[in-house]
Length: 192
Length: 352
Image (cartoon, rainbow over all chains, first blue to last red; front, side):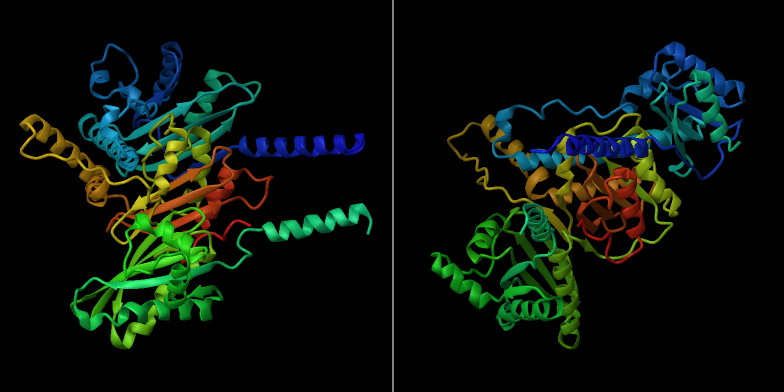
């Protein structure tokens, strides 16, 4: 049985270890391969209510980015062509078919799962290619905005090369608000 | 001895004994089956495994049993060493041979004085089978081929399932698929971007990510023409009996079911090849390497598989990648380890 002092020391050590791990994960991360300058044709994907989306899009537009109508308004029929839900996450919970078809076929089922991942990525790449060719979009920008003590993050993809050109994890500060975070990301994207 | 001192000594001894990789792997060789049907090459069925066993034993300091001894061991258990085995039979033979790994395979002489050698390495504990193909010249260069294959086997046995066919230089365009998302994914990307590997837009064009939890680990098992890693199941093959007594509808159903199994099981390599070809075209042929990195739930261990998109073959495989320190962000540390070892012939050092 550990005595009281040993127990306190152990708890402190564990707390320190947990805190160190948590801090390391909240560190800011930034890499920029090329500037996404004002005037660029961009599509912004952000998973938040429409009123907040408007604030984010307005911020980009105010800085002279040419924001394409994607994930922007229900009035646009583009939603029917490029389903925004497909860019949100993979949802693959539905069964393959009748269970009785899969007698001793766990391996086949697993292989089908793997193929579906390859196919999903391939179809997204094709869609992005169409976005570039048909709608003259140059950059795809993804943002997730989070409150204080959490990390907001963003990524930009150059559709001309399919390359990731900007990534940033931004630990949201106490004095930050929605607009200041978006301003920060826009400045970061533009290389300012 | 004081209790505290005894405790520390026991702890040190236990940790030394428990450290993975310190115990030498112990492998047993079966025969290499002559696939050509030409009896003139049958003598190689025994010579090859004996040569591999000698080379691995002498050059790589691994205890290796030759086919003759393995056959004796199997006979004691009422079994016999066959020329060839299906992957499904390997775990049972590995048990009977009484070694950590059982290795068997086959060879096929090719035109131009070349020979193709395929080995299957079955780990007794996990019952997983790693198979790879290596082609080389016969006669004068046969010893070089034996040494090359022996080195592949020894590396796999001693370094947590490491297999790497070549270095991946900076500038190689990588499509990276993992079970991370959001800010964690950014932390994984950073070391690759900083090392000069263009990261393509697979997965990172999602706000969320593959959220199938443990199902993602299915991607650990991989099948390509020159390398595969699988867990053969014990389930018997599905047979669908039909004939003139059945009506046309039933026959059609059986055909459809058979087609399903062909596509996704017996001919999966071809099916996947086609899927990867479409994948390449989808990315307008910009992907050089498809890198799949799977993380454990607590992110402290990881595995990787890499496919060369030029020929769609397995080019890199590694298990048990872990950060060196508990204080590191595991995602960033593992990403750094992988990115650092892209350009080497071997890959990250095994977790200790």
